[in-house]
Image (cartoon, rainbow, N blue to C red; front, side, top):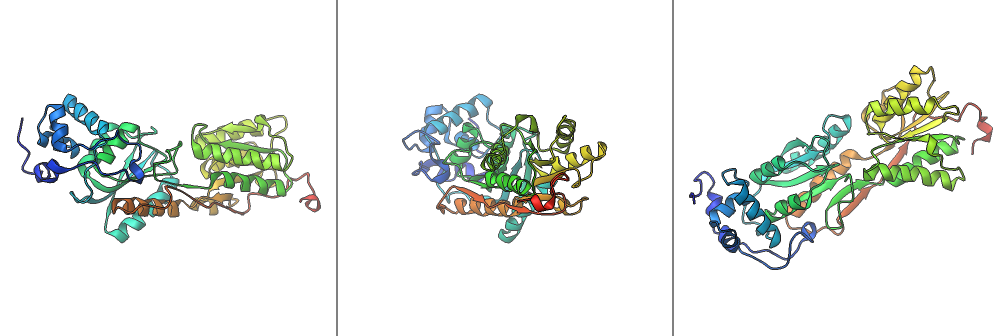
Length: 373
């Protein structure tokens, strides 16, 4: 077995021989089986040397894939976790996006950068290329970098990836989780259901009754919550939910355009549409222009997110403000607190959304203003 590389002195530090699994902490609950094991014991079980196990822990590439897999399985089975404080993290925050190229992502980056600047940290950006979990190459890079924390946006970790970060004592937080992250995973979100209610209620109070909805991906938790809020507001107002007026999108401009054309070409088109995000609202604007409709005279539109561009389009967009920058700041602060051994009072935090009224909504043309509730 080869000796440790002298450029990686952490491979044979004393902590490698004495680390034991600590009691469970907030982000690691359920991550491994009971029983503590030293690194040396795991090495014996795997049939390798302790420096080899240390290489695996440190994300080194000079370990055979079969050996790496065997060691990782033993680390997961024993719930191994490096003792906090035995290795200093790099002054980095890893920020991972489901998709990176959007104005939405820029608001999140700004929030994480704000905290990183205060803490003297740098930010590493990654994209999972539309996957709900980043690939193993990304995980290997994180293990090698050993950042102060990982923030996953609209993404998550599979059980094996979670176990790998936990075993290296690398804290992680999920922001705006795509699915249910689990009760033991720290996460920062927004009140999406309340936002859907507020958007739809605003249109109802203006007098609209045929209100369309262009949601996001059906499997994404935030999208489902906004649609559920839309439906709840309709039913509370005594307006029947009509599936014909609902379309699924993907949070992109093109989806808003395509779904908008479908809705506006119905025999009885909606007089107002709530879109699952601002980018889809922009697509709907384009569809309305193509069909010769005026916003808000012929069609009222409400978006979701309150991206900066919504103030400058014509007409300025009424939208639900999702505090993206504040959410990102909260996620960054939470992951740093976890890295310092602080346990939050709650692992799930949802920041409040609020309706921002602009010029894209008004009473429907067939309803006199005096009759609007």
